[in-house]
Image (cartoon, rainbow, N blue to C red; front, side, top):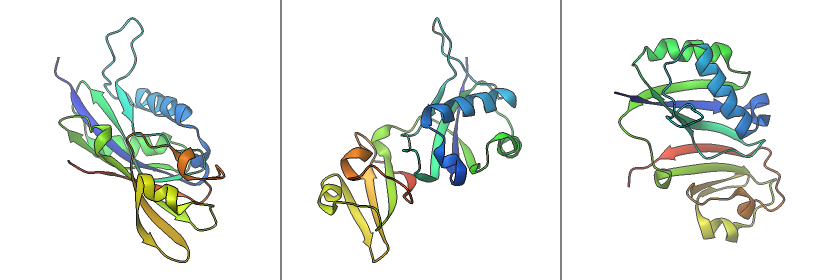
Amino acid sequence: MKTYKLRVFYKKENISRFISHIFFCKLIERCLRRIDVPIRFSESFTPRPKISFCPPLPIPVIGINEFFEIEVLDIFDLNSFIEKTNKILPEGTEIKNCLWVEKKVPLSSIYGIYFIPLNEKVVKEKIENSGKIIEDDSKIIKVIFKMENFSHKKIFVNGLFDGIKRELVIKDE
């Protein structure tokens, strides 16, 4: 059976940033079923849709460029897909773009660029151990992390993530 892979880029901000990752996964699955996307299901005893999500966002972090990948059974019009999906998604979540891809992106090639306001208590030594500071000015620190084996708890001291933005980038190695 021929299957196709669709990579969907979206942003998650405003009120949607308070939706947990698990609930967001269910929300996307229900949305795809509602607009009749020909999703491929696993062939296990309990079939599940073949959808893979990027590393989860902590609850108030804003996602500028997040993505998920869907395996589908048939090719369809992407503009119509984006339009229908955006009508259903909650306020603050928007599909920005999508494209057909040959293979899944491995976790080892996903990087997260974090925009951290300086009102957040950050220990720069911890950041430099697992990431690289790209920009450091009086208001914000811009840091890039490899998302493989990354933990937010190790970097952000007080566990409050309000005002932080993340942009995922795929780098071929």
